[in-house]
Length: 467
Image (cartoon, rainbow, N blue to C red; front, side, top):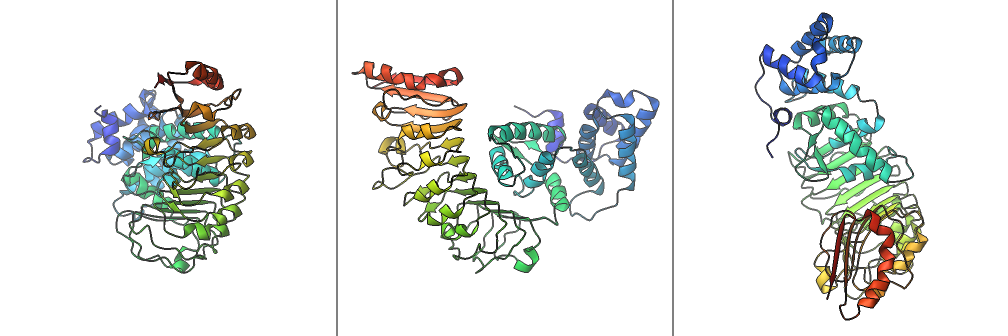
């Protein structure tokens, strides 16, 4: 679908507009109230002039001022006039001032966090909203007991940020983007807290450690670092994003994370080797995301007693992560698309899940290929372990045979689920049920169907078949 004219303005930089075009664009975004009185009209025209005919400045300030009273319009006009020029390469001062004011009008700390955090990603990056939620939980931005509440609030906040032109809609479901100009402004606003080397000029050496000590967040993404330092000493660091770097299988020295005692969020996608040996030092960690990783040792994982979010999505386990049973603070465990070698029965050993009494969300959906070759399926996971999870509200799994479900078992009253019992089942939509049983014994299937009765009122996609 073709973008609307306003969407196009948000995404594409064009030449400056004429005075009449600027006024028309401001009125379209701020509303007709700017012509409600001669005084309001005069103040609005002052602000329009300060935007210098730049569409992104006009749209941003117009969206920010929609619904504001006359006194707020006057204050904004004064702020724009007295704003000092800033030397940000490629960013017009007037654009910066309008974006800064739009940010200043954000009232929620959660919204400010999500705006700031998006600048840690590379230019034109499709940022998963779910990632922002999991990072925010780890940093204590979202403090609700239930994970679904921060997720719902994040969607609302992102809609507001898009309305304010601080974020853009992505072509990918569940993602958002940040305009390059907006990202440059966000980076300048967070330059004393965040170190960002994400995309653009490739980084081949680790930055000077002394220069990084003051930062609370470091993002090194899509780079080509040839060697990690022997040690890191970052006493203030709370967030470390090491994602999508081309030399991802470099070995990391075992003691390299000892100087990150305050770290709360670690995301390492296409992770370096030996990282799991070092994470035991991160005893303050709340969110750990290791995607597309070969997991060779999980003993150090058991030291992360405060961990709430654990995601190994797309990883391959050479050994069962038995140490997970020690992580009794976990609220979310994501093992989607994970696999294990044929000589082990399951990724999670028996009686591990039952120890995680605080878990609210458990995702165990296997890679598609494993549905055929039985490689990586949680085949021997005992479904009865779910009875030990009183907080469970979201669950995803493939159970390859109805016989794996004991007579009389019922699934919890899940709010979100993705489940396939029997063969087949590739649909990955939310609240999906696939049920496939043997045609020669329909009675057995019918007696087992009682287990999913609590799920039916919330099922969006239901597939019934036999073989």
